Picture 1: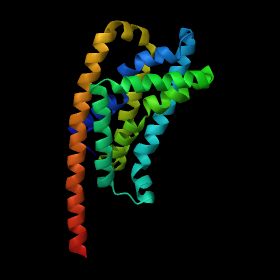
Picture 2 (picture 1 turned 45 degrees about the vertical axis):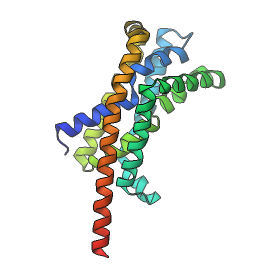
Picture 3 (picture 1 turned 90 degrees about the vertical axis):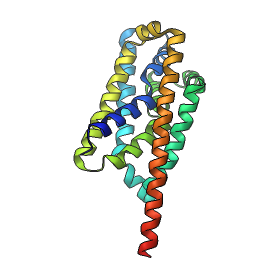
Picture 4 (picture 1 turned 60 degrees about the vertical axis):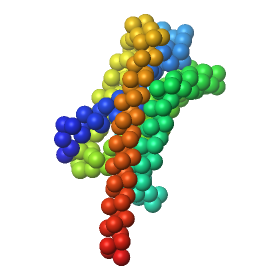
Length: 217
């Protein structure tokens, strides 16, 4: 079972990629006109769908990669690059603009009762960054206890997200425009560092894999 440091890194990675504080104003936007009870129902459904999607990729990520013929080190490099791009968007405030556009498109196309699935659960909660992070972490939490720990971490992140949704009005008012901007940039810098670590570990593993293949051949 992974140690405390690995579990803490996993928690930070998923928290940063899901970005609950950044989703708070978007949640308010797509649930405009709903009362508190209706917003609560949307929050529960969105978080449950997000939990299901991320859990599937966390538990079966290696199997999915194996079926597609992709090695985990290769995916770690690709996923790290993707996470770095998301970090770049967060630092320069492009991610928020993209999320806002997704939210606006969904509210015009779908009925109100469907917005929990799209855009809240997918792609705002379980987006490409969070899915990539889940698959990458599945390689580090490979044994049964590790998988259970990873599921617990994902569940904790979604519980935090649900709490932010429930308190969205207060969170948005507390942070304000300046607070959200500062927090998003800080999270982006942290995610960039984690992404570089993913790429570095992936490249190292690829070289080791290539060396083992050459030695075996």
